[in-house]
Amino acid sequence: MLQAALAAALLSTGAWAQALAPEMATPDVELPSIPSINQYANPKAPANNPLATEAELVLSAKLAENGENIGRGLVWRVFAPDADTDGKLPLLATAKGGTTSFNLAPGSYLVHVAFGRAGATKRITMTRAKRNETMILDAGGVKLNAVLSGGARIPQDQLRFSIYEDHEDASGERALIIPDVKPESVVRLNAGTYQIVSNYGTANAVIRADIRVEAGKITEANVEHRAAQLTMKLVREAGGEALADTAWSVLTTSGDIVRESVGAFASIVLAEGEYVIIAKNKDKIYQRDFKVVAGRNQDVELLATNGASAASTANQPASGDDPLD
Image (cartoon, rainbow, N blue to C red; front, side, top):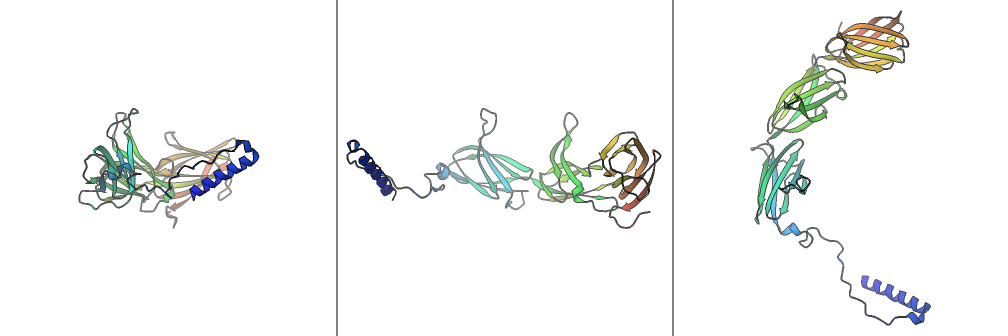
């Protein structure tokens, strides 16, 4: 059909031109033969895949030597063994899922497999024969969570974890591996020891702990925060409306600033200990000392009287049930 359409188009064009300018008409010519066109190019056909005739490398991975093959979640990468002019290893092929295969020409390759933050690399030499290779990740997982003193649960949206290497560098710092890990999520890591940092809120309620990840196992780490949440407001009388445009500062007893904010209400999670609360409204400053008790959430009122402060507190357990007093 393509031949007929092309011939018709050429003949029609020639006839139109002859009608306009008879002296420019050309003699009949034999049309060239047009080869047939396939509907699509099969990527698996040897003609379209030069490596299809090369030997096959079948790759699988396990968390531990005696474990089962990992069925999904793997990322495979095949690199050339020699760096290019930029100092990087050329990436030759990738695949995702579980067990996979590549057709590779004879030669040496670097194969890397990643499972979450766990990974392994192996040099593999291909010949003309098919090869099966199983990669041992020597990896496990960790699931993180935290509670308050007494076992009260912490709202998950106020809780975040970070995972660091277990050893310090020359400057005394630990390398951050994974930031902002949500509670109850499973993180895949190579077997080894790590330091986890749990942040409750965004102030100073921070807990550090070392954990050990074992190959083929999920380690559950549950840390305990000795902290509480305070909601502060400046009022003219007990139980009154909070005064707007109030600037808040929370300091340690040694004068270090823990948190500053502006607003009618100031909500903050603080580690157990003693603090100084300062509220500034217009040209007046109100201040009081305050003690945070682990696991006891509190609503704190500062009374705006004579430039000095008095306060009333409503103490509640973290679960919000019965008063503790």
